[in-house]
Amino acid sequence: MTLNLCVLTPNRTVWDSEVKEIILSTNSGQIGVLKNHAPIATALDIGILKIRLTNQQWVTMALMGGFARIGNNEITILVNDAEKSIDIDPQEAQQTLKIAEANLNKAEGKRQTIEANLALRRARTRVETILESINRF
Image (cartoon, rainbow, N blue to C red; front, top):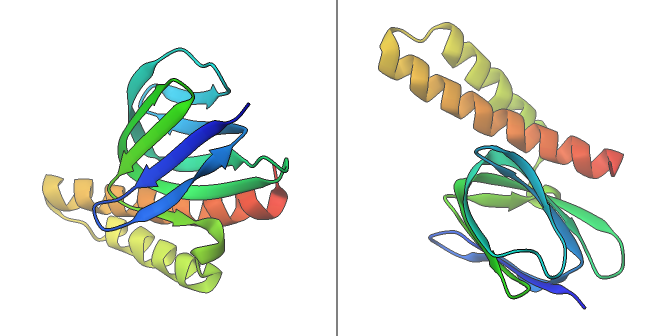
């Protein structure tokens, strides 16, 4: 038996197929989901979604915060944005990370600092998603 995983952004469906297992980052830590998981709705943090496919391969995806609903072997993830690791350009991700770090260093005031920290977390997550897919945890 498998789980049906659907990852949605405001603009598109990023994933819609059966999987064996997922590991996702919630606001209170990581959770793993297998078949027959207890029903839950949870807020998601900016982080990496790890997906074990039915052929036992693992795939990673960068999630940019949102919500997940789990129940009846169906997982629906609604996020602000999501990118599969294979869709992330490593050079562009590294460049974005450098820019985000520089912007944080020159941020002035509370608002700029908060926005720069958020951009840095997003950039780091994209780079870490690529590294996770290479290392295959």
